[in-house]
Image: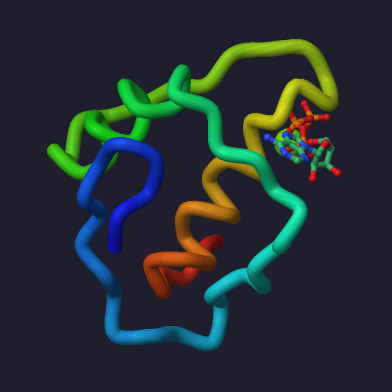
Length: 69
Ligand SMILES: Nc1ncnc2c1ncn2[C@@H]1O[C@H](COP(=O)(O)OP(=O)(O)OP(=O)(O)O)[C@@H](O)[C@H]1O
Ligand SMILES: [Mg+2]
């Protein structure tokens, strides 16, 4: 699954796969984070409340069929 500029491997589906938010906007700035996730590096997202940390992870997972806990 292509998300932004990154190929993200798809999961097999899971009860905890989030719902797709069709209004969610992927920015090119997210590509570095996605690349780190795909390469299985540990990632910490830092930002003000409402900056979009949780929704980035959820919307990547929603589109690539991975569960989120
Ligand atoms: N790129 C985006 N496109 C559309 N909506 C977005 C985007 N980024 C964030 N939002 C929306 O902004 C709101 C706040 O985002 P989110 O909950 O991800 O922030 P957060 O950084 O996890 O905040 P907190 O630190 O409080 O947990 C959500 O409703 C989310 O859907
Ligand atoms: Mg959050």
